Amino acid sequence: MADSVFANVVRAPEDPILGVTVAYNKDQSPVKLNLGVGAYRTEEGKPLVLNVVRKAEQLLVNDPSRVKEYLPITGLADFNKLSAKLILGANSPAIQENRVTTVQCLSGTGSLRVGGEFLAKHYHEKTIYIPLPTWGNHPKIFTLAGLSVKTYRYYDPNTRGLDFSGLLEDLGNAPSGAIVLLHACAHNPTGVDPTSDQWEQIRQLMRSKGLLPFFDSAYQGFASGNLDSDAGSVRMFVADGGECVAAQSYAKNMGLYGERVGALSIVCKSADVAARVESQLKLVIRPMYSNPPLHGASIVANILKDGELYTEWTIEHFIYLLTGTPGDWSHIVKQIGMFTFTGLNTNQVAFMTKEYHVYMTSDGRISMAGLSLKTIPHLADAIHAAVTNVV
Ligand code: PGU
Image (tube, rainbow, N blue to C red; front, side):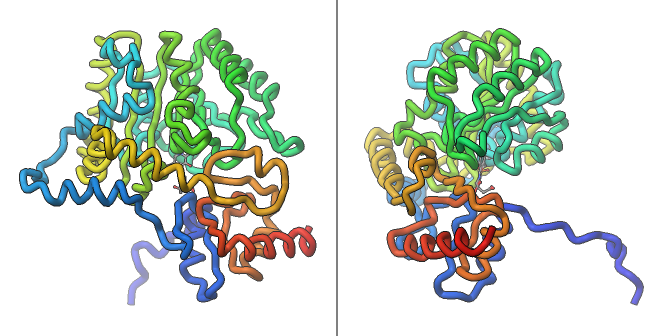
């Protein structure tokens, strides 16, 4: 047999986050626990679908007038309008003045990628600053989008809090006009967010240097439990009349992970600019995947536009924020969002996986949403053993 024409393809490593699920699926142990990916689980550790999502889905199935026609390149119009309202606020002047363009994209990742490619093509400064650390896919998304990626200091391992002076210093030294990736709330993986006063200082510094804010909003509702408060950082930057970019994901806050529902909004100075920006976004999207999928966006639109379902969503979703925290380390209580940055090192994580079948990312991040009352003691044992046996 002749060699494969692909014989020189080298094996790539598993993804640092999604690869944790691959390893977990292979494990046969009955006590295994997956705290890698940020996803809600039932007490039994099974994936959880919100009731309100089931209801909205049923409405779609029962409606015979619904067809499977292609969506426009920009996606479902209702979904886009409602998404802009969710992040910018119902009474946002920017929306009223028609200077926001919103396009439906493939969840948060797709929104970041489309936004990145648009900026690489049409924005004058090609450097994007991302926090250190950040979600592991950020540098890859923006590099492949054609931007050059640099980091700014964000987390201080000594205080297990924000390195605010480092952040201000690094953004202060960024070239004017550079793009800055900001986690709108519930920073992943650290769970550390700036206070409103700190956000205000960041805003002033960024506006004074003409730095362009690119918000990643993957956890709206997870930081404070309130959708509006969690969009406060974004709204602060819109209220000053300046421009910004925002990527939204419904993967976590509606539990729609695999439906791949998200939106990219670009807030512009005028309606005329917004229309031209949208025309160019279509040119980015069309050759990439032509137009986005219909089903998930229809679910979201049904929930967001219906008063009753909307209320049900806000109540049901936030009940799951009340998951208990193991241990009494004060940083764990202080950190917010779906994840806890435990401070466990790579060796301790490897030990917990090998000896206790507990799966998490090697940086020590655990998804709190993967825990249940039943599994907390097992995790606590595993952490105790790791901390006492492994340095
Ligand atoms: N932005 C941030 C900050 C994220 O944490 C995630 C998902 C995304 C964007 C993109 O999510 P979409 O599913 O594309 O909407 N991070 C999760 C999910 C697993 C992953 O890495 O994709 C996580 O566990 O970090």
